[in-house]
Image (cartoon, rainbow, N blue to C red):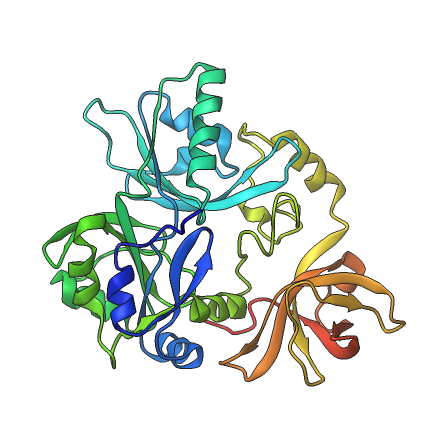
Length: 368
């Protein structure tokens, strides 16, 4: 199957970006170097093309009920312009995907409207899931897959607020997880105070056909260079943020929100698919936890590497790992039994057959 392409694929190619397949999309993994792009975001700012993310709109009289029953957080607390991080779970409480849910301005009929952002390549799956449950429950809501209508960019870094203010012509006036309609470079956009790097930042949704105007308004080789998915990955690992399909996966890495360290997304006083199973987990506890790991010996932990105790017995595994550009240390994320999950506990990482000493550390790895 041919890879889907973001609207600025050729623009990125003209800058000699290196591309990779991600979630069925052909996306830039780096423009300059992962380290340079990572450092730009930590110290100044950078802009990411994240148009591979999925976008679905839900509107109508029963939109709130449908969103509430299919996501684990409490949608009813959202006012227009608010957003929240949430999960989508099976009846057994296993994470299918994580998502950000935006409450949009009300539609012409005065009904609530939502935009939610599943991960790359999940748009068709989630559209089917929403439609199937809507029909099963007899709800009145319109579900629209708008992934191919929107481009999405992330302007991230300590200088991001000033950059957005300059392009916008005024201060954005947004707190974390707030969003509003905004005119950027003459284009009507949705501007949100969200991100995936741990830095101050914004995410911008703009019409697919007008993406280049918005992108060009921010890109500056010194002040705000273009950044690829490689730096996005090292930045999110330093913050201990989950990657769908890697730190959790419905079949290969089945995890519930409590195991994955995002139990705060679960509101048990609401009714949603998976609630009863997660209430049992909350009551009984988990056997394993998602933790940060810092290597003591030289080596880099990679996805799938075993974690052992001091006796060499396998107790867990790595789900994500990298050499931290900020810390100049090898760091990793993974799952270990709860009795090995306290910071300071020794674990070993098996790197190409050799055990490397490591220790469990608190997340995030860096304090932002």
